[in-house]
Image 1 (cartoon, rainbow, N blue to C red):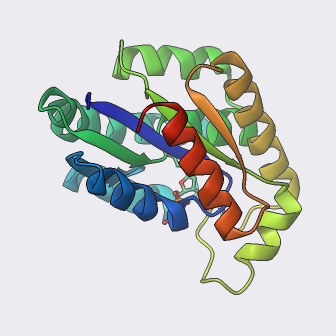
Image 2: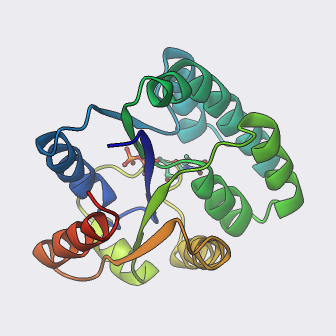
Length: 203
Ligand code: TYD
């Protein structure tokens, strides 16, 4: 099995965090050496930036600069070395989330985000991105009562509808790596959709 970089994306409440451990388990059972990580975060420095990001009010460009600073550290310290060692990296969110949240949600220019992407991880893109897609209203319902909301999770349905639309555009622009998962379906059905996508790619 070749080294692969697999990312999990979607609006808050889409259920990606339920399914990521499942995929890790499945790939390990198939013999892959799997590293599970997340963004914002994944290194001590990036985890510190994550706390700032999720707890402090700031403007969209500051937000993007912090997310990409953490990403730079994460790619250099963790993701690139793991891929070089032939491991499969499963990452809970990556640059698609910046385009969706800071771009779609916050309205930051895509030119800025594309420039940051090219600066921070030139030549590195996920091989496969599971996009857990569902209407913002359904996700909001799921988040209710789940736990205390962070700064992003407190935002309204309109914000998450914009984030969702930005994911849709990103998926449209890179159809070879994006797999849209109907995340409004029951958990067993979502699991089946993921399994089918992995099998279709020879996993
Ligand atoms: P999330 O994966 O939802 O963490 P958790 O499951 O622990 O709540 O990520 C935290 C938040 O960070 C989420 O609301 C989206 C936001 N985020 C951005 O705004 N930009 C980014 O580039 C990334 C990676 C995340």
